[in-house]
Structure formats: structure tokens, C-alpha cells
Amino acid sequence: MAVLSVEGLTTNYKTLRGWVRAAEDISFEVEQGEAMGLAGESGCGKSTVALSLLKILPPGGKIRKGKILLSGQDLVPLSEKEMRKIRWKGISIVFQGAMNALNPVFKVGDQIAEAIKTHEPKVADSEVRERVAKLLETVGIEPSRANNYPHEFSGGMRQRALIAMALAADPSVVVADEPGTALDVIVQAQILRLLRDLKDRLGLSMILISHDLSIIAETCEKVAIMYAGRIVEYGDAVTIFKDPKHPYTQGLIKAFPSIKGEKVRLTSIPGSPPDLLNPPAGCRFNPRCPFVMDVCKRVEPILEEHGDKGHTVSCHLYH
View: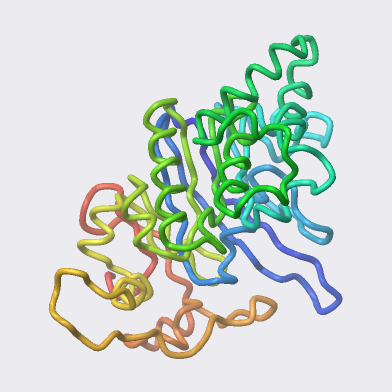
């Protein structure tokens, strides 16, 4: 059975102009010890999905329908009090901006300890300190640095400290939201290697959110490609990279240079993502699609299996 199963998740934001349809009909599964990548342009709803999983949406954000099954338990109907028992213990998150996610007036070690004490209040202080030291060591930080404040850490170290905090209560699923943002390429590679090692060593299930397909290709077994609040392609990572079906996925892959291949002019996807207050009728990608047909502007395509087993795509080209 899947550790995390999301079925028909729809999360919208209420504004004065109406509902912003940020994530609609999102479905995917993450098995034990598996990493799934969630990819797409900025503003396509990736972070909304991440925040929905932990039910920490900003004001105005609302899960309007769908199920989030964590080890068989649906999180959507749970109250805030019940969710507090599940956050960090069942599912935890590594936030996008490490400096903003850590409290600047508390020592890093105390912030990691708080996650442990919240879920295990009877644990002795000496054991908590021991566990914090072990967690910092696990992510490659000298345990004595637990007494430092966030501003005394470099960007990469802060990101590692956040990963240690996410692992503090031994969760079954970790969501990493753009873990490489604002880091240079070398530190980014170290953080990704660390996440991959932790996944293999601890048998973690992981959701990696990124707009960088090369990061996902290196780290994940499965990929879900999002566009304008919807999943347009979903399946095994190798299959999607070797045989992308959706025109949007093809465009994303072509926008990356090949290290080994010959030099070619990179092609970008024309236009920009739609306004999610009033998304286009039919397929949301139709105003930018090079293969657009009449049916694309009228009928919304369904996510259906094409080609390899488990490789689903929502596109009228394959009917």
C-alpha cells in the first residue's frame, strides 16, 4: 500500500475577484522509500500542493475537495489539533527559503529540539540534546553548531539544518519544496546528494518539488508534471524523460541543454502561464501549444494511460 495517496485534490484561494484555481484534481501516489518529483513552471501550483498536504495554507486557501491519505488515514477532514499530531511525525516539510523558515532569535539546536519535544514530551532533555547532535551529524553539520543562531550559518548549512528539523520526529514522508533555491550549484548538488542518501539509508518517502527537471531526473523514481494547476503527465521518471508525451513536457525537456549532445539552439515555450482566476476553456495549455486543435479549446482532456504501464497524460493528441 502507498504511504501517501492523493486523490482528486482541489485547492483554491479565495480573493475579492473570485476563486484562484491553483491546484485542481491532483492525484498521485508515493510508495515506501520512493521519491516523486513534482515539476513545472513557477506559479503552476506545486507549492500549493505541498502546503495542502500539511494543511498549512495561507489565509484564503481552502481544500475544496479530494482526499489526502497518509498510511490510509484521510487528512482533509481532520481538525487543526489533530493535524498538529501528524505534522513532523507523519509528514514533514523542508521549506523553500531556509532563512525565512528558521526563527532568527532562537538557536538552531533549540528549534530542532522543539519538534522532538512537541511529539515526545516525556523524553529527557539529555536525550533530546543527544538526538539533535545526531541529526546535525546526519546532515553533515558539526554537532557543536547546535548552539549557533541561524545568521551564523551559511545558506547551505541553514538548508541542512532545515532537513535535520524535518527528520527530527522520524516522519514517513518528507516534502522538499525547491530545496536548492538561492544556493549556488555546488551547494545545491551537495543538498540533493544528502537528500538522496537519507532517502536510501532511512527508507524515506519523499516528494521533491522543483522547476529544474535535471534535479528531478537525478533524484526521483516518479514524476508528475504540473501546468496551470493540473497534472498533465505522470509516470516513471526514465519513461517521461525518454518519451515525453505532453507538448508541455516536451517543451520543458527541450529547454535544457545536453552536456553530451551536439550544440543546438535551445527552444523556449512561447507565451506565459494563464491567469488562474479565469483559466482558458478546454486544455489550459492550448494558447501556447504548437499542436493545438479545435477540440483542445473546447474539451478538457482527461489524464489517461498511454504507452508504458502507469504513464498517464492528459492530451487530445493521443485519442
